Image (tube, rainbow, N blue to C red; front, top):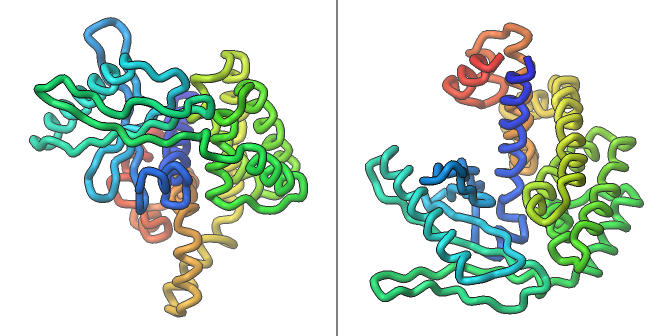
Length: 310
């Protein structure tokens, strides 16, 4: 049972991170990432007993693999690390597809870094990394705006969620800012279901970006909150399916109205997580796969994968 829940929680977390890097994310905007990228496995086997792991790897809609890193102390050693990522990713993709992939690297630097080398050149070959400097952002303005909206229960936009997740990397005391933002988000526990969902998305992104910059104690606390909250998110979606997204989709398809299509686009970013949770609920209710496909839009193959985990 624990293994099944762990698989489902991982699926949900992956969906949250995929949606977090959509085009209204400030990191995505900086690097020119458009559309809805897919998150790719970022762990690579090493020749030693340890594995090496990139922060995030995104598969973009044009087929490019985008390695995304967060750095606070850039050195030339980073480029040897990136080179190992590229080597292992290229080899993995080639073995799976018999084609060499296009790979790009983007690095986000904490606010204390003003400038860093972006070129690795050894004569035989060279590569450049794209860069984003958080020192170019007004962290005080972002913090005050986000704090005001959270305290006054004003909905955060997707762009503001991504700004909030970067706040600890903009602060001088990263651990302190991470805890402060985390404590603000925990107030969502007493708010509406929509706020709880936003809180879950925010802490997932916050943890993914900042886990290498905080203490083990805080990491453990955040992971515990996420494990507890993913069950709340699953429950919320199960309870609201008939009244919420499912009904809206059915009406939009039946009527074919322009406003229905607009609502569908607006709900698109939530759809992936909700469809996944809906499918889990329906499988637990012993619905036929054909019915689940009809209601969720997921493929038969994806639903069969979920079914194996139940």
